[in-house]
Length: 315
Ligand code: SF4
Image 1: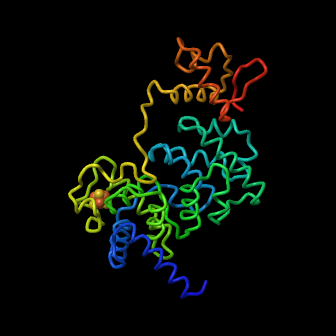
Image 2 (image 1 turned 30 degrees about the vertical axis):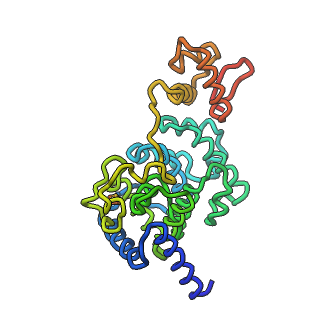
């Protein structure tokens, strides 16, 4: 791409962001400057921000998708000490990866990570690709994760769109955004060659200032560009139902997820669970039918294997 073509493409993506957010080019520029200055002062000191190793970044991103930051801070280095590369992970039985993941919840992430490691070894010589399209073709890697690896490992100028960023964008726009709009806005806001810092700043802004329940608009660096704030924060919150913005998590206590978690935790601790003990292990001693149904889902998801006698073990 020539310098002129590159400049035109950048200005058109910035224009697309401005169109979605209802901002002029000058306002997009001002938003970038104030947000970048705030992020340089306020950024969180998180251990994965010190690496550009694509595998380390991928592991951190998968852990962070459903688990609180404080728990990931503790578990991320331990996981990488056991599985420092895709090759080490791919060579291990998937059950070992599940065991190392136990306690983080949503254990299917461990199975997906193992599948991804196997393909990275088989098709990419053990190194995660930098190309966004190639990242998207890996098993278990969705649009968010692919962009996060591209931005945080390879410092690409792509917009990372998670629930935090989606919430900020919808509020700045003052309306719920369709998926293509939100991604266009996230991509178009990234200042040239600042993909890493910009995206970390946007994540921080959503996590620390533009929070789901109590946005701190009085201290927000982009308050002057925010349509929802200008309107007086009326209900409904435009982030509700907007692209990439997660709804509240369903109640855990008493849920199928709780029983799944108990079963996987028992298997990860080395237990072999016969069919007639499933209900007890899963916390539903009076409901063996429910235990069987949920255990079948655990088997389908690759989180357990059945022995010939029907007992469950780690795969
Ligand atoms: S002004 Fe308030 S609602 Fe708007 S982006 Fe900032 S914190 Fe979020």
